[in-house]
Image 1: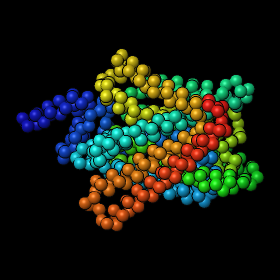
Image 2 (image 1 turned 90 degrees about the vertical axis):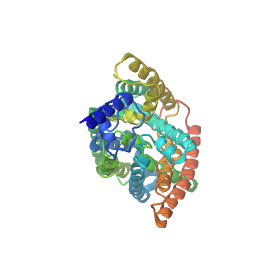
Image 3 (image 1 turned 45 degrees about the vertical axis):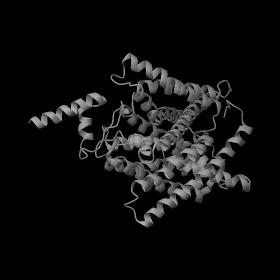
Image 4 (image 1 turned 180 degrees about the horizontal axis):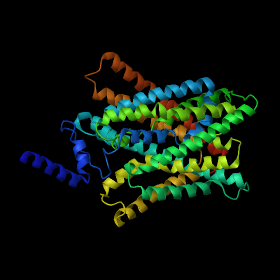
Length: 455
């Protein structure tokens, strides 16, 4: 009895110091007593695998999907697009599984991508990973605000086409709504019911986009599916589209999402990943392929601008795309919020004046900057290509394979080691090529459009 009391007292003392619940401490101590509790003021080890699966699915089935017909299928065509998307799905599942299996490497939970890299490689790679991840998530969030602004403008032009309100104005409105949402939701696990709303919103614009594109495809004459551009430009756009393929499935923040899942974390995370890459990819495939089939090489980067149909349906699709973008942005901004909250010791009641004012100032400032960049350079396809090239390839493919190789070097056969080195070399080459193609695209668009463009 005395031993039990001592153990219980130790748990509660630990919970008090770390600002986490006694239940969380019990969960974290279940792995033979060896897994150390990471320092964070956000909730960890509380969510079911299904909730985490919905978080992951929200990420891949966001309003970004409405751009995939134009940014992936148009540059790649039917064969390249279909084969590329299926391969990207399989490779992404494999790479994410490698990262998930390293979550408790060395008897310690690694709840941040940079912490895992730092534990394996040291301080320099820790800083490099943090920089890459920050850029990756910032650019993803920038894209979400562009999408949210595009959805609002899509509603506006259905009723008025007078050019009085331009895209940068709608981006500013979207940024304000995203900031208010970020202030109200203190951490990733607090999304709770909002994930249910996100799923409903996604289903609404998926069903509407699918039905209207299917109707347009049946009514319209045969489309031109040839890949546009000169032979030289086709090479660059094809390489750039491969970056979009990997961007579609990868977040660059898997350890942060895995931190929220309850024990056993690796087993439950694998369930969430299987859910994401089976059930979760079906809507993405349907909308992407149907959109390209209906409009061919004339498909634009925001599919709802192509569709014809009742005004109320298009309004509903744009409203739900806007609302879902607000929720999805919060997911990808959460690592930045967690880092800042932990660094400044923001804990306790979310509505305490100190905590609320901190979120208003810090998260408000972050989203103000993100909104300004979105309005300044509202080129969605460029952001997807550049993000995939300079961040998603290194974080999700190169680093994942190399970390797994280093962590399990003594356990892998020669064939397995060669397999991981082949992946590392291949994706390194792809990353360099895709970066060159993306930069070229940015330069060309900079000549064609001006800053604060009304696209």
